[in-house]
Image (cartoon, rainbow, N blue to C red; front, side):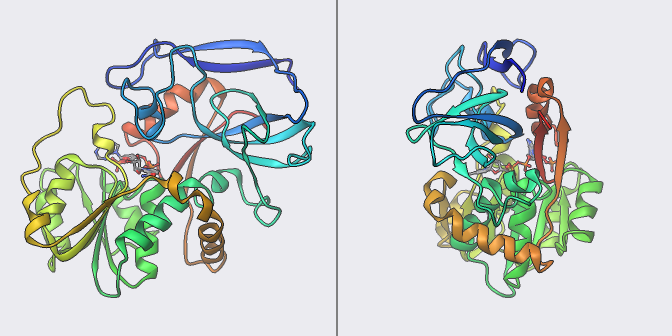
Length: 338
Ligand SMILES: NC(=O)c1ccc[n+]([C@@H]2O[C@H](COP(=O)([O-])OP(=O)(O)OC[C@H]3O[C@@H](n4cnc5c(N)ncnc54)[C@H](OP(=O)(O)O)[C@@H]3O)[C@@H](O)[C@H]2O)c1
């Protein structure tokens, strides 16, 4: 065990992408533990678009990270000392660890202990397909999108962590699935490797034509990860009684200007569309059922899990920007310790 605890603290609120002034890297002694507490050695950090929303001025579904506070993030670690029988030494824990090497847990500041049945899964899978990411795709697609056999489902940010799972889940339900992703390589990958029926490359000049051609019967379900003009064009093709699972609006997370007008918003009214935004934290009590189903489908070879792994604690700020430059495929994680 190292004697030091590195942490990234928020130094200033970024305008646009984060830069070298956004965080300071500090080194402090490893915290001690008191009665009822356990010490966790954090080994893997989940990189999520919402991390960027937490360091803005405006409160979201959680209060903003304050200047000087450790950057908030999900992570996976091992209990290395314990005065709490709920956290035995050697157990794996998953939850809000932050960008630091060590964190202290207790019953009032809990993390989820990874059950024995899952602890042999690769760490990136525990943070991805079998973690918050997989659960987001599961509840968003199956309970809000509710795809039916033969319907057309569109997933944006389709080659990313949530999108890859959401699209494959809609395929499992017998839908025709169209993914929107950036660049020909990602588009070919989601079709050839993940089994999507078609892909739209939103970085190509003719992407709106591609979207029309890929959805000749209109769109019944929009699993929306991006917002902006991509969402607007999808809205323009929604069918009567379509559903929109509003999962994320990543195109706006670094924006310094207001988003373009949604010229197709009226389609929601004309076509009696049901749109529901959701925050996965609300489904936390039901994660067990989602993870059981997802693990079963992975074991049966019906779902493929993909990840991009970056190594090194000091890479954390860079890794967060990778999401906004499309430099990840599937779940993005940073390995910070062996
Ligand atoms: N509601 C919830 O509780 C919840 C939970 C988890 C995630 N989310 C949301 O789900 C979405 C996906 O999250 P994730 O964790 O799966 O991340 P991700 O999709 O793995 O990573 C982000 C991807 O978004 C695409 N992207 C980035 N900027 C874009 C832009 N301006 N326009 C179009 N595409 C852009 C990039 O792919 P390309 O290379 O294809 O551009 C990038 O790889 C995000 O909006 C996130 O906030 C919501």
